[in-house]
Length: 95
Image (tube, rainbow, N blue to C red; front, side):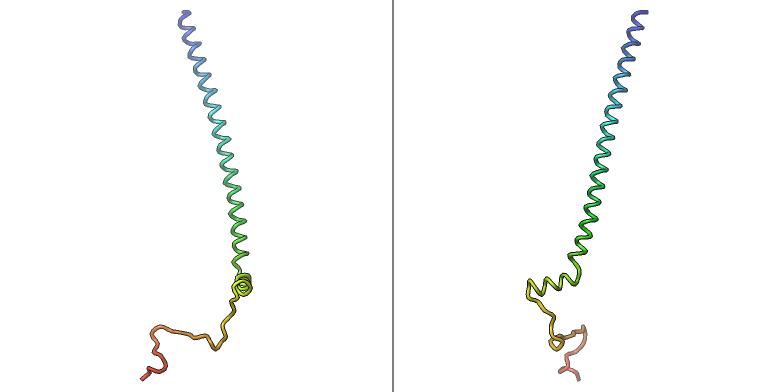
């Protein structure tokens, strides 16, 4: 009878250790999950901020200002502009 009691005690201790180990792993995984979700939220906020910044830097008015100020570019004169259409014959070749 003492042998059965000792065997049952050993099984109970093993089960208790298993429960403790499972709870510890579960808590550790939950902490990792929350850290990952916090990182994802931070990255999402950063992405939104970068999209706003990209929209600001890419406005036509700013691009035109940088092109004229830094690169010395300007709009062409209306007389210097030519429109070319595909399939059209040049003016001198019409018959």
